[in-house]
Length: 127
Image 1: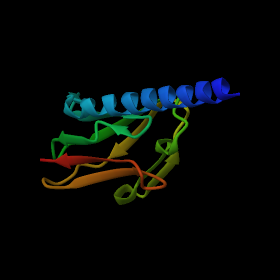
Image 2: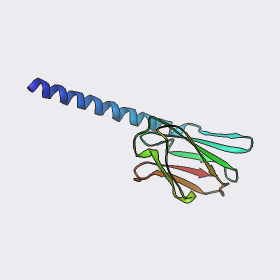
Image 3: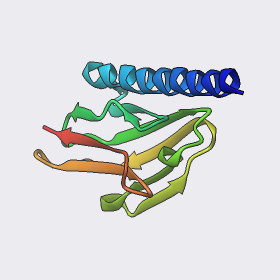
Image 4: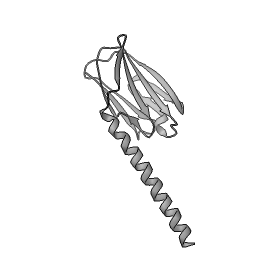
């Protein structure tokens, strides 16, 4: 009986550690370049799973913009995306790409996205 309990506790600790390490490793993506300009349109890629990555994006002001939100087996609350300033609220697919059109933003504008519970968020700063 003691061996079974110890085995279960060890498994829980290992699984929790793996989840913690995987979730924190995604934070390193905050420094990636996720903005491309194609045919005069700015395309910003955000990954949604266990939060939004990168958490902060620097973008150009005064350009038509598209946010592409990518999901891949996303079951957590980051699949329920809200962007208040755009009056946008949508449940994202478990896996796939969701395209959100954003009108040109003024310099200094900040666009914030968050999950429906407010636990996870991202921001796009327009310069």
